[in-house]
Structure formats: structure tokens, C-alpha cells
Amino acid sequence: MDKIIVDARGCACPEPVLKTKRAVASGAEVLTVLVDNNTAVENVKRFAASKGYQADVTQEGGDFHIELKK
Image 1 (cartoon, rainbow, N blue to C red):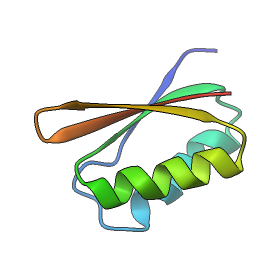
Image 2 (image 1 turned 90 degrees about the vertical axis):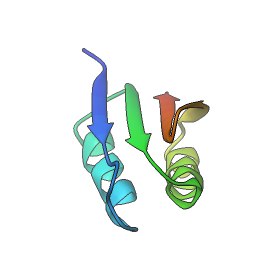
Image 3 (image 1 turned 30 degrees about the vertical axis):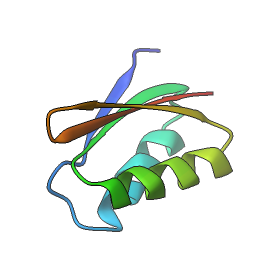
């Protein structure tokens, strides 16, 4: 399966988590979530951990890239 990219930049909570949840529900084992604030990073990481994903966060400018892997 191809890696899924979830672009949640500019979205207010809880939308980044909801978008991530939809991608996880589609069966994705590897996905990248793009967000633009620390609160979204922490919320997505917490959700991902509850679903058995490992999260690796990198920052590029004002954006955060959260790599999630099963």
C-alpha cells in the first residue's frame, strides 16, 4: 500500500486527529500527517499511540511532519 499523506495544516483541533483517524481506518500502515502547531502534534501522537503506531516528528519551517508506522 502506498504511503498516505494527511494535510491538516491550518485545521483547528480536533480536525487533525479526525483526519488521521480516517486515514488509519482506511488500513494505512504508514502515513505522514502534516500539521502546523504543537498542540496538533501532541494530539495526533497520542491518538496514533493508542492505535499501535510509532510516531517520528520532524519540523520543517513552521510545519511539523509526523511519520506514523505500524
